Image 1 (cartoon, rainbow, N blue to C red):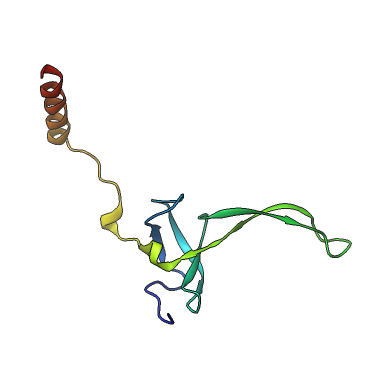
Image 2 (cartoon, rainbow, N blue to C red; image 1 turned 30 degrees about the vertical axis):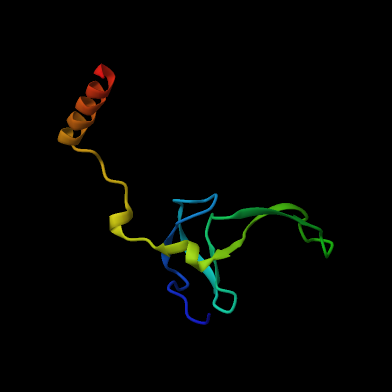
Length: 101
């Protein structure tokens, strides 16, 4: 699996998993493993010990890798659309019909 459909810097949307529906930028790509790292997606906590005198230690939040098949490129069609007034009227009518039955 050497070729992936996303590249570093692409904006992607997550298709499945705990972060389904989140949008982020691809930070890193690993074609050999078939995984990508996306900003603010699959955030994991990592306990870091100071290696030198001035190094910070503590609990850090790091993005973990996810499989590339679980993401796809984000397009304008993926943006949530606002309901028009006619769509709102249709939904209220259908709700009224269901309540009367």
